Amino acid sequence: QVQLVESGGGLVQPGGSLRLSCAASGTSFSGRVLGWYRQAPGKQRELVAAMSSGGDINYADSVKGRFTISRDNAKRWIYLKMNSLKPEDTAVYYCNVRSANYVVNYWGQGTQVTVSS
Image 1 (cartoon, rainbow, N blue to C red):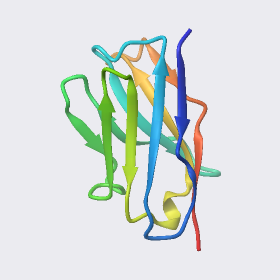
Image 2 (spheres, rainbow, N blue to C red):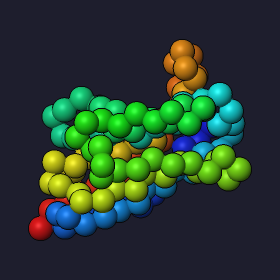
Image 3 (cartoon, rainbow, N blue to C red):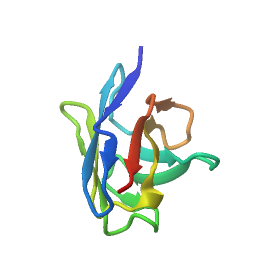
């Protein structure tokens, strides 16, 4: 059984930092695209950052220069370091492990990030 469990969310002031973690079990990272998505209230889920198995990384324009995705293949963890957080970053953040053709597509349960003073 595949499980993706996110942690590290919470309340942070504007300008602050958080690091999200995603622990994966029951699935390999080999050949997979690892990603973070977010969904704000009333909005569609959107891609935040994605890393291919070859190490290519794609960031949403809104987070470029502030967020960094990384992974630990051996331990099967995915991380998202978020700096210079803004109120508009407030959302539920989900980790994702998928194949390139989306035939395999796993989601975590999400972790809430709230940026507010």
